[in-house]
Image 1 (spheres, rainbow, N blue to C red):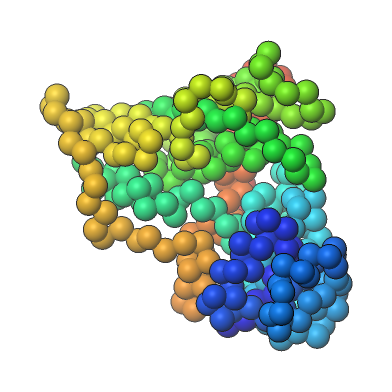
Image 2: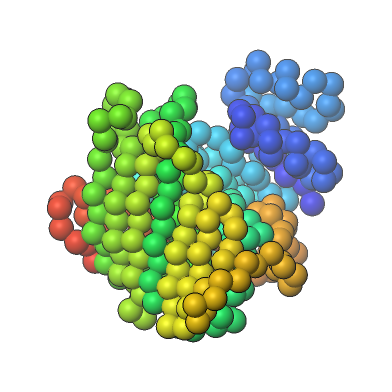
Length: 320
């Protein structure tokens, strides 16, 4: 199988190396011709026009690593050629636009996956395995804490939920196996935050999910204290015990005893690219398909509305 890579920025170059190493690269599209220097003497075709690349290069799928503002245009162009797409998150920062993009992929039966990588982490897969095995009984509640100092330059304004919290909300769905019902949230900029128009630095949220499960979320990208992993630290309570994930270390607490879990045998450790390729080969929907990811983006969308209104919001999960 061969791919057209669109975008050769910092994230795009990482994808370039992965695709090249696996013999999957057909061509590269990047509007900035100076970026071609990253390819050195590699023989792959380089285009500054996506239209030309799509018309001239035979490919099986497209990898979209452009800036979020360009995602929809690139995805729609690929769909025009009935080309499967693996897209970095978000589909779009505009929730309604995201719905339209996914609806088209579903309607035309075009494979469309979002590269949601947090749930592919080995220790995250292990936690899911433990929950599915009923190690702590029936899931009751989840508490997530995320703290880092993450002031970075982008072509867009970085905000806590759109850029990072969406990963944690996705893990709420992944761990529980259920969808959100309602959300209360407060998004704000603390005194120690930087001044940047449109930036939202801190988040508090309380979510009610199906089956009576609750989740609390506390996050900051301006914290100057001890940093958590990107996946956050977790306390997951069940009817027969609890699982704590602290600094990527898994602890199971039952009957007053704590057991450290470091045996990851039986865990599917494939990354997003491997999952996408496997889904294409098997003719099935990918684990983090656009349709599934939209349910995660709904949590972010309604958390924003809850913060803006000061009132809890019922979550309407899209059915596509």
